[in-house]
Image (cartoon, rainbow, N blue to C red):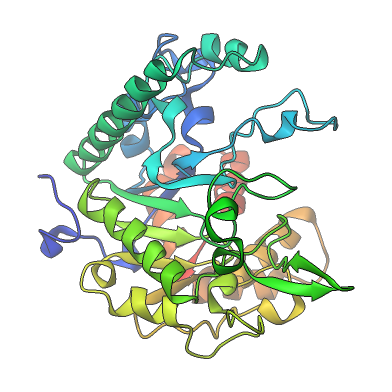
Length: 355
């Protein structure tokens, strides 16, 4: 299949209902020596590109990459805790909305570099950082091109609900205009961060300058890197009033994304909840006929069924057959090559998108 992306060639884009999505963490996907890759390539964007045949042969036609925006993978080392020996490879601690994760460049993400992180040496001097920034951008473009050449779409897991400036840290927005970029409240006579995310801050996405920043960032990843769509983390935060924090029925940033000439052609998936009681918007997320939802009801039903909770056979069967083109396609393509354990893993990890 020839290269394509959502702006220049709509005819080759897959329908949402035909997606079979493989979700992976860019570093962890090939970090192990069992990947068969050399040390300089393991855990990098190039490492994923090297495994395109594996992804394709398994029956997937899309990959969803956990956050590739540059993020703070050293956050666990900031204070003693049970995880202070670990790197954050999860990625939900954004530092820069326009830059690929620098250490996902080849020679920047392998096991040898990990040992340098623990010794707090990182890359060395700033000139090395510049080299890795440019290299990461080029290699991410190569990854997307490789996937497209094999008929596989690329979706990004994006985090606009909060940033890595929680727990008293600041390296960007807090130093520029704290009260514009974050949702604030008066708490016992002191100004505090509203925390709908569980991460210490909530990005003020419906304040106009912040809305524009989000739109510019998303367009950048489509126009510069040719990604095909986005899964938005804790998207209910993008529905909150910039002053009161209440859920809005027509949030400006969500509407602007749906109506944007570039972004409206992409696949848009909301995780329609946040960490508050009023933020659970499954089945009622404002969509303007462009947004899909991560199907939390199916996910919760499948998890409970696999755990052995009683009385779920009918509900699980209804979810699987009535809603789940996504999983049915997986079975059609893969069941002949799976044992019972593999089938259960597929059911557990598949996340269903509904419109």
